[in-house]
Structure formats: structure tokens, C-alpha cells
Length: 125
Image (cartoon, rainbow, N blue to C red; front, side, top):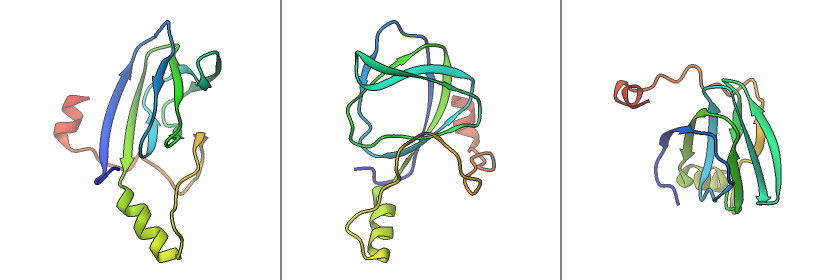
């Protein structure tokens, strides 16, 4: 369970083998550099994805996945706190609320370009 907003920078390199991965919380990723990777729920059945800077991914939550990086890529991942989703669910009178995953999320109302990053985070990137 994610208790607060978390921002993480990934700098991934080309890999020869697919690696197991499971995202426990609700996350959104912004592609910072062009790159390719393969992704799927089985190591033997991976789909190829290519991304350009600025594209968004809404990550799967609670699903066992396999990922193989086909080229170097940099990604900014934002983990969203579960408390925010619980508050939205209560307001809507629902048991739970989740964002549906998307390998290429497009919505003109969502933009990361206007989010200023704190200087210490920029220095670590």
C-alpha cells in the first residue's frame, strides 16, 4: 500500500533476458527518452512497445508481468497514494476506484510537462 506520492527515475539498459516485475500500487510513467521494451504476462509471450519522450503509461497494478528492455530508456514513475483512491471511492459511494492500465495513455487533460521538479531531484536525475 502506497501511503504518499512517490517519484522515481529509472534509467534502464538493454537486457538479453526478460525480468519478472509486479507493481503493487497505482502508478503513472512518463517516458523521458525514446526507447523500446517487450512486456507481457508470460516470459514466452512478450509484446513489443516503442515510446517517444512525453508519452504516458498507466502501469498495471497487482499483475505479474515480464519486461525486457530492448534499448536504453529513461522513465519518470509516479506512484499515487492509495488514500487518494479511497477518498474518491468514498465520495462516489463505491468500494474502490482504480485507473485502468494503458500502454499509451492519451488525454489532453493530463500533462506532466508543467510539473516543476525540486532541485535535489533534478540533480539526482
